[in-house]
Image 1 (cartoon, rainbow, N blue to C red):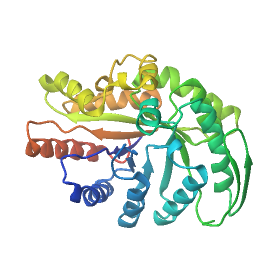
Image 2: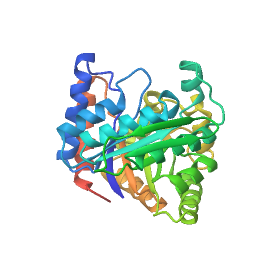
Image 3: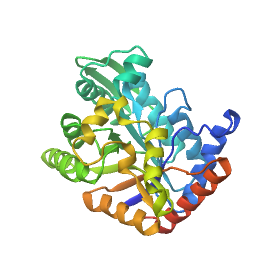
Amino acid sequence: MRIGLMVGSDKERSRADRLGGLIADAVAAERDGFTAFWMPQVPGYLDAMTAVTLIGQATDRIEIGTAVVPIQTRHPMIMAQQALTTQIACGGRFTLGIGPSHHWIVNSQLGLPYDRPARLMGDYLDVLDASFAGPGTVDVDNENYCVHSPVDITDAFEMPVLLSALGPTMLQLAGERAGGTVLWMADERAIQDHVVPRISAAANRAGRTAPRIVAGVPVALCSTDETDDARGYASEVLGHADFSPNYVRLLQQGDAEDVGDTMAAGDESAVLERLRRYRDAGVTDLAVRIVPLGKDVGERTASRRRTQEFLSSLCPSL
């Protein structure tokens, strides 16, 4: 199981420092031996692919990925153009993570329809597949897209694609047509009993290689008596599951009730034991979301540093 980092919106940094700080975080992750640096597209925050492009210019070895970009926010041809351009900037180290997002983001925040997201994803992949097979002409006519357009950006790199596949239909699609899935709010039982069998069977039927299972997992190094508070704090700052029915359904496949229950928290032995359980459940790539603990910025900065140093000692894989 490869060990990477996942970041989110860092509201403790000033707005002027957020982009530069993010790039510095990626440089530090590469220096510390992490295999990947994953960035979600957070509503109202830094644009993920633009940031990834700049990170690609500042690093040399680390994989850089989006986890994930909502497909409704970009026409698939525009997504393909931006992804291919980003791949050039990253020297072939970019992995495009995409997903249908959630109703509360797509419909409630952006005013866009959120209908049949899995069908939309399949149609979206038709355009991406044709675009990434180029240079050449993309000719796609399906229920959602009518595209007849040239693509002439690069033939030097492949474009790995991962889907945020949580339910059975999306897991089948990810296994048959993508390189794997990017998960959030999935505990060990949900991964072992729900995710891995479905996506692996789909990949096998399609004659594809074994899929990547990238699991976003909150982690905090703390004392044993702080563990319960750490889990509760993680659920508060990372967003409760009840905001998103997609996550609620995924949680029902396992033993966790909220995102904090998926967390690896405690002393070094407790964190290591939980991470090994994720590995044994079938996770191929760990995307650690460090949750810094403390009463003020200084304490949280020290907490983040301790957790990252411990994780670095486990890199590159477990």
